[in-house]
Length: 394
Image (cartoon, rainbow, N blue to C red):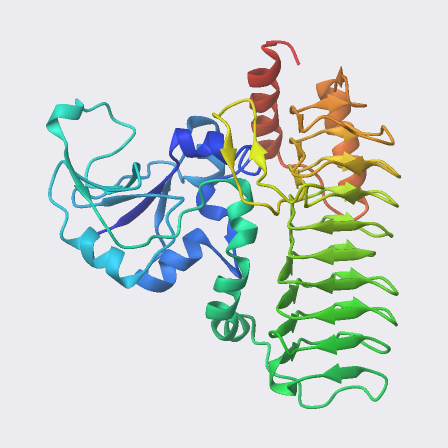
């Protein structure tokens, strides 16, 4: 098997802004596994990554080399057997294209090659592509259903054999996976529409209603009376409350109080204060057109909640319009927010967040969970700050 190298395409990084600001596209979780993990399961070997310069220290070991027969695959492409077969038949300077997106090629995409030297081959079967932020959420249910069994086996979590008498189950017990050291007394589980995965060391307080498909990451807490449904996938060390529907929430993020979010993407280390509510549907029920800094306008359908980049904080009582984008490292406090796009490092909705202050505040939050920014993470944030503000002195 030739080496598979997943590369970050610059145009796609723009369309996936801000959820990939500080990470490789390949590490995005779509369903239960990341894109990189999906390819690893298919080819039985962990793919190498090719990322922009400022991310290399995080993802690419020093002295990494790519084999002469390597196949470079666009990181936004989700794998399948038919694609892999086409990849293996690629010849030098051939490029596979789907809907004007470069899917795979034999030559390094970061090296300059005259287009007339390339041979483009179009494919006419369907390929799942993460071509905008909301696509992650739109494809969650499909990949959750496909990956549930393999994911639970990888985590050594099995269908529960004995449920607490203080816990209510509606549906098939074989679809309820509960890890070790969990507390579910007083919770209500409903597996009629899909499996529920509760990882190790999770606490679910009484009167919470959890409807599958769903995965709650390890060491997370679900507060009393929480309602979660519609294929929601939650990372590790999160605290959740209120009403949450069809949402992906990254690691170490909190939405711990009342308020609604749906069809949303929440990055790592975010905090949504009490009463934060985000619309996911226009009053007209018409298509949502996204207009942001780095791309031409595009439609995402008629459902789209907020997208919040990593390290951002939304203050108490804030209301977000349909499909609002809050970028990385923002601190938002206005009661009613009307803009649809907020750039990186925004302080109180209009001012620039001072870089040193931003790092201090991030570390303050991380300290609650016994973590601190690494030097690599600080370098990435410094690059993003300078890219946005054009300042040499931080």
